[in-house]
Amino acid sequence: MNKIYFAIYNPATDSIEIYTGEKLKIIFNCTRLNNNVFLDDPLDIAYLHRLARDEPFNYVHFTLQPDGLQGYIEAMNVFN
Image 1 (cartoon, rainbow, N blue to C red):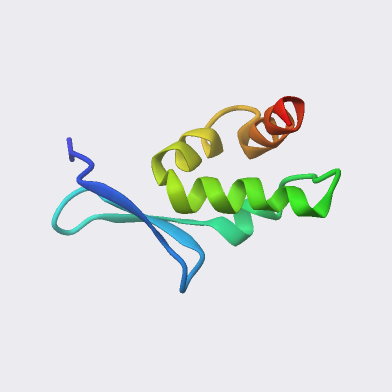
Image 2: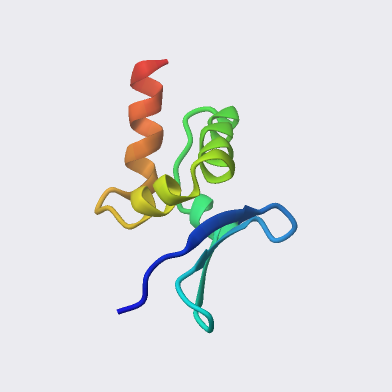
């Protein structure tokens, strides 16, 4: 099993790159993932951009949950 060495947000490609070994890299395209989220207010997209940039592991974690990034947006709207 490969260990995850690090994850980083790449602003040039708007993606999160996860490096799990010398030869394995997993890429999550944030633009495509964010397009699947319904936003009550278009400015709510800032929540996802900040999460991807500042906490790439958490972004990936929420992406892989059953309610995905939509659940994250809904929770942020409750708190704000």
